[in-house]
Image 1 (spheres, rainbow, N blue to C red):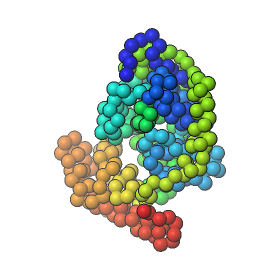
Image 2 (image 1 turned 135 degrees about the vertical axis):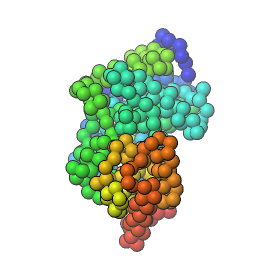
Image 3 (image 1 turned 90 degrees about the vertical axis):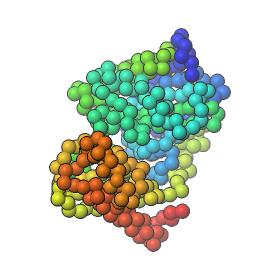
Image 4 (image 1 turned 60 degrees about the horizontal axis):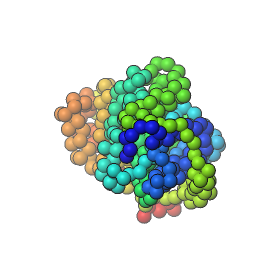
Amino acid sequence: MSRGRGGDWRYIADDGVTASFGLAADEAVTRRQGTGQAPPTVRLYTYRSHCALVGRFQRAAAEVRLDECRGRGVAINRRPTGGGAILMGADQLGVAVMTPRAELERSYDRTRELFQRFGAGLCDALRALGIPAEYRRKNDLEVNGRKIAGLGIYFDRSGGLLFHASLLVDLDIPLMLAVLRTPFEKISDKEIATVAERVTTVRRESGSAVPVDEVRALVREGYAATLGVDLAPGDFTADEHGEIAQLERERYGTAAWVEREPAIADTAGSATMKTPGGLVSAHLTLAGDVIKAVYLTGDFFCDERAVVAVERALRWHATDPRRVAATVAALAACEGLALPQVTPEDVGAVVGRAAEAARRSEQAAIAKGCFVNP
């Protein structure tokens, strides 16, 4: 990766793009990195409000409420990068860093290093606003345990690398919950409050209505500083526009791409049990036999950071109650984050019951011929 100055890198800013154009543009520029047909590029842009974007390996119908999206005019598409479903619009800043991977071996084993490297520009920008963000979990930037940006990586066969991020300048949580599927059986004020404690925004953390353009300018400065390059303002070339249009026609504008099915369907389940500390409910989504997402709710009392830490530790975790209990116990021993009067065994039990409920719902769906899980 070049670290010289003098316009080695290109900077593109655009707003209100369609879902198909936004994704096709990132892939087209990434493809051209390996052949040297495009300079390394940082693109900071917003989507037309609103669109729901699922990760490359997700099942759209399991992640997005398709009828709700159609009724609200929310476009649906699939990113080339992995990760979870997100809601994008005028108040969410899309970030794409596209570069040759000449100095980067093509290995997803290095994703943590790459997330830290390319997420540094975002952290730098947030610090300029007095927001202490850091890389946490599998692919998030967090502020005091709350997600403020999601990250993704894609290696193109041609030799290009695409880093994706979605920075939450603001977020309409009720809309997000209406169009994206969650483990909750219903969406109420309580569920909205639960999710609001897991995510945050630039405006919430700064305490002011920071314009998206101001955030974008700080992110641009952050990348120039952390990558050690000049970011010369530019635009897509005529050839790039041609390739973008072709990708829209052949991929991002097609049902075959948006509605493609993964090998394993997701299932959701919930369970509640009484503990000495109060009622504890687990709402989870399984990807096969692995916990993809989990929310813990109830009438117990504890530090919110402990709940978020437990949920974070159980992402992409086995459902075996004993293993869940061991992970929760280790979290309490190492970081002092525990649920008072709710034992690790209690958490393991309620998560195990929720997983069983998910499996039962899957079997019922298969019996009705709703879907087939290969």
